[in-house]
Image 1 (cartoon, rainbow, N blue to C red):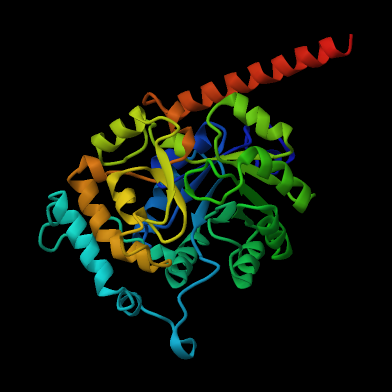
Image 2: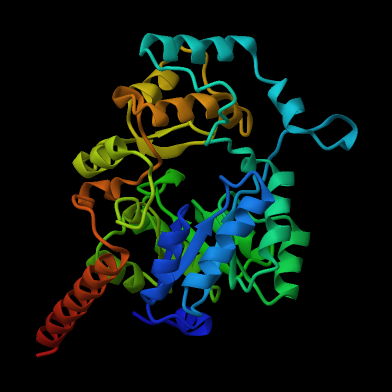
Length: 374
C-alpha cells in the first residue's frame, strides 16, 4: 500500500493512524504505517514531553507525527489581550453549569475525590495551550504536524516548514480543502461525515474525489468510514494518497481507555449507534450516542456553548462519568466504522487485516478489468 506520499515519508503502508495513546502511535509506526499522536489532552508541557520521549524510544526509528487543535475561530479577548483559562471559564453561563449538575445528579454520578483533578481537561482547544505543545514537539524529530480544525496560523506553518516538517489539515468540504492549499498546507485530510470526532456534512465517497480535484497536485488522505483493506483500496481508487484512521485503534490491545465498560460498549455498538453532537466540544463531533448526548441535543435544554466554552464546561462531568463508568452516559468520539470493531486486536493484527483485505480488493478489480478487456 505505497503511494508517492508514503514513499516521501519513508513508510511501508500509506496508513496514517491518529490516536491519543502513545503505545498505539508507536505500534502503528512499527507496523509500517505512520503514527500520529493526538496532543489535545496534554495540558502540561512536561506530560507531552514524557510521552514523546516514550514514543521516540519505541518507534524503532520509524517516522511519526503530532496532531494539535488550533481552532480557526476563537474566543476574542478585549483589546487583543490573551485570555487565561479563568477568563474563559468566567464566560460560561450559570444556567449551563446548573444543567450539568442536574443531569449528573439525575444519574447519581459521584463527585471526584477532594483534590482529584479532571483527567479530561481539554484546554488544548485553546490556541495558547496548543502553542506550548508545539514548543515541546519541535524539539523532537516529528515528520508531520496535523491540525484538526482548519489551517494552523501562518507562523506555525512557516515554523514547521523551517524544520522540515510537513503540515496537514482536516477538511470537510472541497472549499475548506482549497483554503488549506492557499494557506500553504502540504497535505489535506478529507474527513467525511462518517468519521469520528469533528466532522462535516459530506460523506467520504463524495468528499474524497472532490478534495483531490480541488487541491491537485497536493496529496489528499481519505478519512471517515474506513476500517478494512477493501475500504482503503476504494479510497486510493478515488485519488487519495493514503488513509487517515482513528476510530479503529480504540479497541486495540495497546489502547488505554481506562474503562472496561467503554470498551464493551464500543465492541457492542453498531454503525448506527453514533451521533454528530456538539455536546463534547461545542462543534459537531461524531461520538457514541448516549443519554448524555441526548440531554444536550434536546431542544428543551440550554443548548451547547461555542468552543472552547463547552469543552471546559463538561470536562469535570466527563471525567466523573468515565471514572465511575456510568453506563447510560458513558461515551467517546468514534466513527460509524465502530460497527466493524467487534473484537480486541493488536495494532499489528489490524494491519495484517488491512493489508490482506487490500490485496483481495486489488485482485478482484484486476480480474474484473481483465474480463472486461476480453
